[in-house]
Image (tube, rainbow, N blue to C red; front, side, top):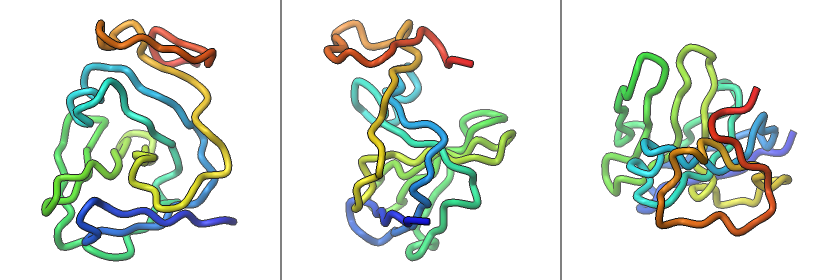
Length: 133
């Protein structure tokens, strides 16, 4: 199994994640926009056991957004690293934090019903108003 390396902006936090993503996509929900400061978040979902912090655990911070989601970021530089989906024991890694290239590319847009009104999706990937089944 191929492992991908990732890190935060200041490089104090680093991690490894298995290149076996369940889902790779672009999320346009308002909460992801707030967390990333961008038009959308680009993420890949893996089982929580597929992600390992390799350095910097002492500067990692957690924000409990809801009963089901905890956001994980670097307390030093503020980089959004991943979110933990607590009820299903999965993580969504922010692909922009990867130092290596995943085998597959994101292939779907989700929560398009709440996308930023000033952003137009210009590719031909499938678009869903919410999370598809």
